[in-house]
Image 1 (cartoon, rainbow, N blue to C red):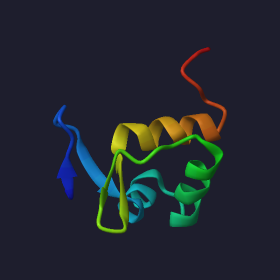
Image 2: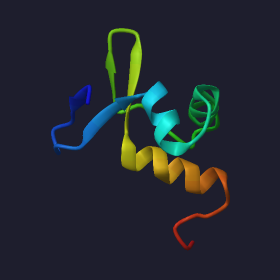
Image 3: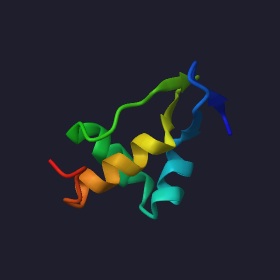
Length: 68
């Protein structure tokens, strides 16, 4: 992986996040624009995301929220 947060959760690039979620990298960028996903860190110009946040954004985008 590309890094780790203080909590030990691995951080992944947008490209890898897209691959893990089964979407295009443009979809990851769109989720960020819509406020469904926020970058946890940066590595140079690359934004890094927590995998758990990517999956939460996917659920939100597909209307499968956490039961609210």
